[in-house]
Length: 538
Image 1: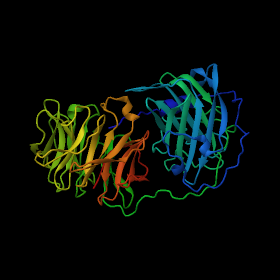
Image 2: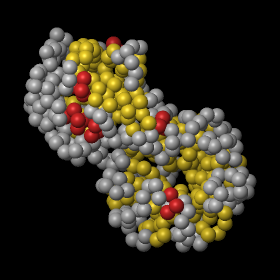
Image 3: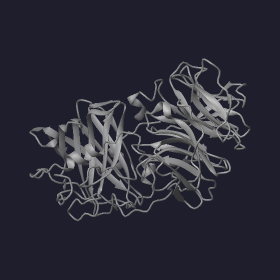
Image 4: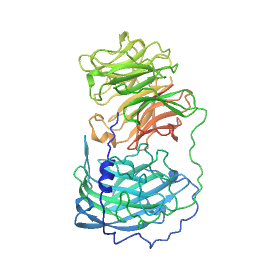
């Protein structure tokens, strides 16, 4: 649904190969007091939300560092200098880092293929503080991007791709008067995958400023705050993080006693495969392997024995997307449609006796179609001249879906219909937006809303514009916003009890978050998996 740009090779790999033989003449700023300050009680994540608003004075302990900018991606002639004001504060779970620097021009160009010319910041850590930057030590990056920014979670490596297998942390960069502000919220715990590292009072930090860089060409101005970076770099000149031996309080906690089963799609292991997650045991199991299919749109049967999904030989083989099913134990892979037209977004009926899906029949519009679990077509629910998609069943057998019946494309609204296609009722509507991927507990439907009136599939802004979670009553009596935190939030699903809502969150990677129906976020639900593209919970 949302494109994710992989920038880590360009952001980290090119710079990691640079070796500034001459140390930065400014060196660490030792003029600032090293007092770690009082013990932090209020969680850092609560004190400093990553929303693009940076108030260094509110954090305290501001440091100022002169950064010399050089052309040719940091290896050419000096092109001036910038003053970077920055702060660091931690509690027992997170490190908060914030920066402000001057820059007269805003370079934040993206197109459908990725970055063109951009400003940014890259932060490097010598996690153990032993004076050498070693393989596996942490790195984070922000790149200015259109109306937002692109966050990349990285680690030091001698290999080609330093993108972390499991993404963590948050970062946002925003334009301020005469320059930029950037902030990061970074877990201080070690990464079980062997990337990143535990942060302590010994941890050292360095950062790089980008000015009008062209990543594909390795061009533009780059400034190294405290000398070079890369595998084997001497980090003895990097300053230690200001650090407090802190105890936290009031951290959100994941709920216990969760039931049911979650199925999801991820390319965590390479190819896109289907996995299951048992919320009670917190165990992840792989369901598919070696299918040769680009997999998406999973739906779990209500008896939790089968998964329906759509797949094709490749992502762009649009005429070859068909509906498949497979048992949750990985056996019985079966193709249910075979018509060489785009079929997708299957959903099981409450009694598991029917599957509704979207099919692009002749004429170009998507129709909602009913079939048996064995693949026998029963009915076409969509009339000529309209486009319906993203169907899901309500508990009473009706169907919630997105449609252009009440708005001109690319804007689409949510509606409810009877199981025979009649009784269509519009339940959402907000000008200049489009609604997608609804599910329902029978009283309300929840779905994601793209906050622009454009086609998200071709709009480069779709990866940097907020997607909000919306709740609409299925009787059409009104709607409300559940979550609008500036991130890309999508594909909400109720837990089987209706007490919680899981959803996908994109911040440069995509993970599964869990929240209360009032919008209170509780944290990451599925551990160790962050390349998630679709899910269902029954």
